[in-house]
Image (cartoon, rainbow, N blue to C red):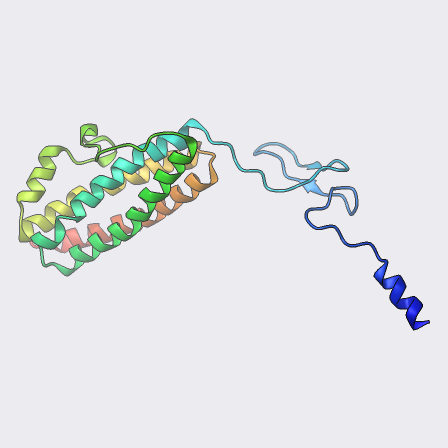
Length: 206
């Protein structure tokens, strides 16, 4: 009897590896697009997450944010030689730590799409989305100490406000999951930094 039991167990069909087709178990409800009703999956249909399509808003976000971030890094690179204020140095470190990886992520994403990575720092954009003009960057390079701290905070706060606006536009019109997640990080992280920089700017001596 024990032998028959073992043989019967060994002849049990192996459980298939991977997702099961719908129809072998209880009905599966598939969510619809925003504003559309859900539906019941058809027998034999394999249900899983489908990557969101890439749209023009996603590409514009990456192609615009890369030079925008590069200019922020250009400004933070001036900090160490021009001020000893601990809070300004901390802001520079935080900005560099966040935006260097974001540039790499967006550059890699564009390369995957077969699109060139934007070159340069976008000075030609002027004040678009908070970008500093070449004249403002020259003034920042020439400043030292207290005047540098004040100008750095003014320019970087405006710069961050532009980035938050860009991120908001991506969240409103973008579809790519990676770009939307990055936009959420930019929106939340830079909004927090804006509030902190404003507090420090108000505390600086006139």
